[in-house]
Image 1 (cartoon, rainbow, N blue to C red):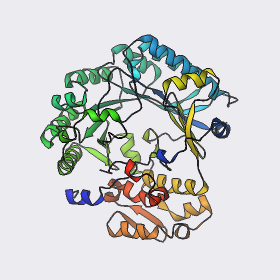
Image 2: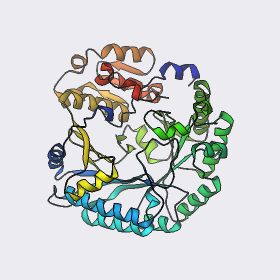
Image 3: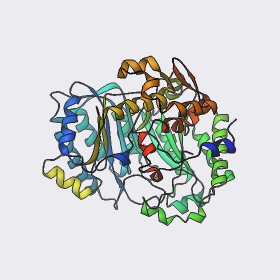
Image 4: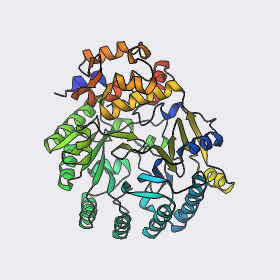
Length: 453
């Protein structure tokens, strides 16, 4: 049984491991030439594409994303679209034929800050220049406050098969405190319209630990969420990091639930979701037991990239747009976060890269282990030998003490063939992976991370 005491035991600061090495280890000295070299390895492979559409009309005070605040004007997104076309043209210069796309995701910001017509024209261009698989996962983040029926009709015409909504909390007091007013009725109407149009996969994001939240108030939000019957739910912990995100200073620390109250909110919400028929996938993801993600989780067939857990792995990940992140072969790359610089570099015919990392051999070995554990919740030592040519116990002789401790705490089971993560360990998988993170051992940026719970 998951108890407060158990959670407190493992509630330490640590990465989410959407990448390894984590982004705060990447270098600002990374150059376009490094990106160009990596792109040359992507010929005749499959891609995941992410388009970052950064604009929002208002700042949500809890937000940890890279967003650009603008009053809605069609010309703002029209200009940005023209630069996405320039970036696409530069990237496609590295391919002799249309690259195969297995996964296509539009995130933000608020992607439907763009008009339905603008989104339609952007997608038409992408479809013309990339070979989008008929089995591709095509997903988009939508904001119920600004999404119209025209938006939904356009998305349906593309073949979008997953909608993702950030809801966070339906309590009006909490919504006012975080500057995101979104009545339940508005969301319910949009969900109903999307189901009528034939969208059959819906993901909802919630956040616990926001100002004025209590167990009682958040369980009311969970009850409302259950009536929407989303296929998947992400239950994220709010990370209050005003030293990194200055707008979070608009949230008074005294308004936040204390550590004990926050744990109570998480435990009660998790129990309510499990009772409602959702399966827990790692620490903060839930899916209906009939959902493809739940089935893949049971078969150890999940994969993970910057978009989170996925069922459609590709060889390389390309990010387009301001601040977007990519991962090709042994290289991480991130575009500039400055919109003006993004435009200027593209006008000069340059890829708008600002930072990244070329991974060492040790980075790649540790990355493989962490991904195996995060996605498949087991590791076969014979697979490690095939991958690296090295015995696991020899290469990770230092880490064996950490693994023994994890076994003693009931997080995993070790034997001569490898390790299997226990149900408890799946909840605290980040804690297990931290033992393989050599950068954490050096303690270079540890305080930059939020707590694992």
